[in-house]
Amino acid sequence: MTGFPAGCSGVYALFMHRAVFLDRDDTLIANSSLAAPDPMPSNYRAGDLTDPGRVKLLPGARDACLLLKEAGFKLIVVTNQGAVARGTGTEADVKATNSRVNELISAGHDEPVIDGFYFCPYHPMGSIAKYTKEHPWRKPGPGMILQASEDHNLDLGQSWMIGDAERDVQAGLAAGLAQSCCLRIGSDQPHRSALEAARHIIETDQLCDVSRAVTMAASDAVQPTRLLVVMPSWIGDVVMATPALRLIRERLPAAYIGALVRPGVEQVLAGTDLVDELHVQRAKGVMGTKLTASIIRKMRYDTALLLTNSFSTALVARLAFIKRRIGYNRDGRGVLLTDKLVAPRLGNGSWAIVPAVRYYWDAALALVGEAGDTLPADPLALPEQVHMELGTTAEEEHLAERILHEARIKPGDRLTIINPGGNNAAKRWPGDRYAALADYLADKHGMKVLINGSPNEADLVQQIALHCQHDVVQLCEHGNTIGSLKAIVRRCQLMVTNDTGPRHIAAAFGVPVVSLFGPTDHRWTLIPKRDGALEIILLANEGLGMMESANDDPVGNRIELIEACRVIEAVDQCLEAGEGV
Image 1 (cartoon, rainbow, N blue to C red):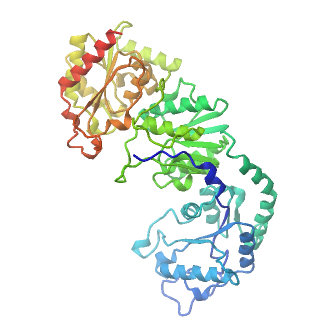
Image 2 (image 1 turned 30 degrees about the horizontal axis):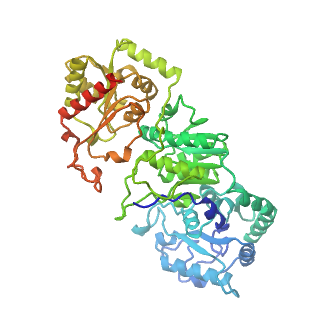
Image 3 (image 1 turned 90 degrees about the horizontal axis):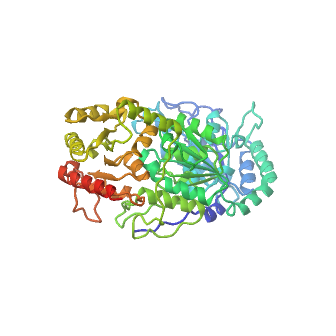
């Protein structure tokens, strides 16, 4: 197994560069004002400049670049080149034109003045099939800026944008540049040319020199004071992140801690003291990401810990101007992180199987500066007395009482809850076996059986209930919620469940669990157990090797391979152990 390096913010931040992003056409060189070429191609469109011989620098453009370069900025040109999609030029033509621009600006200098050129050849209204599509690099999208930031190790929080069009400004804002640092030039603008914009940047930069030096010197010594934790999307993962939240709360007692969660998941953390505020937003699509970032921005968080692996949530943190952003460098989002954590891989390049609890725990350790440098031999390997935890609110308890009363459950009844659903049908143990198990629990152990399911699983729950000889309670018929489910689960003596979220809720409350695993490897979700709380894990393929994953062989790990007799034996063992406590 590979190691788990700690966060790299201290060293990484010191060597990040400031940059000025520059549009090319009508910012550095004349374009729209140029006469059409002679002869003029039939598909020519005004503004398609892909001929190096026609490049003409605008007045002051070269001086602007030299001033900014001397001030220590990296210079990056980002330009839309839809001419390639329209067929009036090729990528090679664009590169040759860019080279000519740099040649004219760099005349008399040993090294090129422009540090990088990025261009987008795509356009949704093109005529060349290969290039006819929308693309995240096309301004006002931020793709070119974000890629340049990754390639050149740029600090976007101290960078600028200069362009002649509103799409240039919007691209800078979408990449996370400050509004005051996105300058539009033109005869009707405060800065009429690139040179005037450059002078404004130099003046502003000089005023900030002292402040910047103090900030950089102190950055590594200052612990987060306002922390945003971006929580996982799934219920079970949120529960598995609670040990990490507790660690953060204990190590940073003075910090204000907010959590960003998707709708519905906020009920999982309700009733705990793990966070100070819950932000409920779904960052779906470009506009959803921008809206979420605009809301989070108002909270002025100085640090974000991303327990997700998604690009969109990392982009939210970046657009919210959160200066320090810690997360695993996966799914192409490294450009958006300041502290890039490395998820371990096996020798063949595949991801090592790391339990989610441990995955989140190590990210929290990196945040507080206590991360180790190796992945322990024991995949879970958490300190003693570390466990998952949940709470309930008075409202959740009241709703649970109402549901149980409607279902004619008496205070002294012994309760088993079965959870036959799951987001993937392949993870579901056959419904007729769950029905037979419910009858066994009623006959042998005198249990009242509750069947849990989401609203989307109501038909599955009903089918199981119809196959039962004894009366069972269909919780989804009584307005059950995630919040009331917590309160109901903690009253139960047993849960039997597939690999799905309620399993973790039961474990967090110390309820014995029988967990059934088919084509999802159980080692991804190993969980710390509370004292006296038994969990029995039943695998479809008990002969699976340590270097094999159930996920890689769905046929050989079909969940129906778990025989009913094995589940009954596990149920008896859990209940007998509970009676002996």
